[in-house]
Length: 107
Length: 107
Image 1 (cartoon, rainbow over the protein chains, first blue to last red):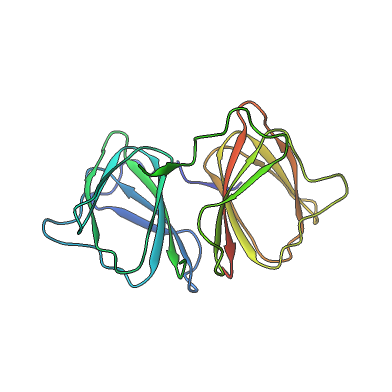
Image 2 (tube, rainbow over the protein chains, first blue to last red):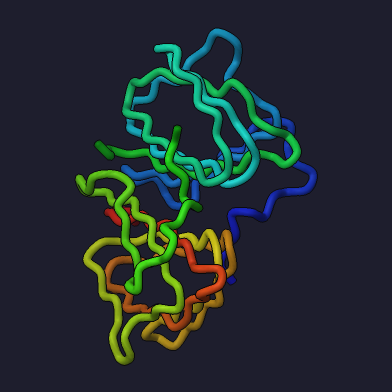
């Protein structure tokens, strides 16, 4: 049986869940489950690799250091080049947000 | 506005739709839309790169040259190492199958 991205642990852990779907040999494919968690106040993601990310379930808000705000619905995808500072401002808890991310040298 | 994986052209083209979501600089992230199409009879995919694939909508059947058959529902994901011969035996047309694939050196 193949694994399924929509199967969630019950109950969800208190912390955001980061699950690599393949070993990270330069390209990381990861499922992230967020249920209300956000990037801590005043902090930014500043990643050394490019990230392509799609929201598969839930609703979320991404914010960029340049002031852009993105409201994401299921299926919405964005490419975040390395060192483009961004943060997760909001994630829905019901349903939880399921993200699929690909980290690597993409652009 | 971010692009959305679930937005499909209407009507769908007659052929299977392969849409790169980022430029292919070694890692290709692609959306594939299949509506009843299958790998031609007697043919196999025999790819030079590893492929990670998730079915996001629809139902599909994958077959491997070693005889394994996988019935896929939305969220099911599989890793297909380079040169693992496989074919798409069935894809639902209503709703159409939406696949997300990542091709690259993954394993």
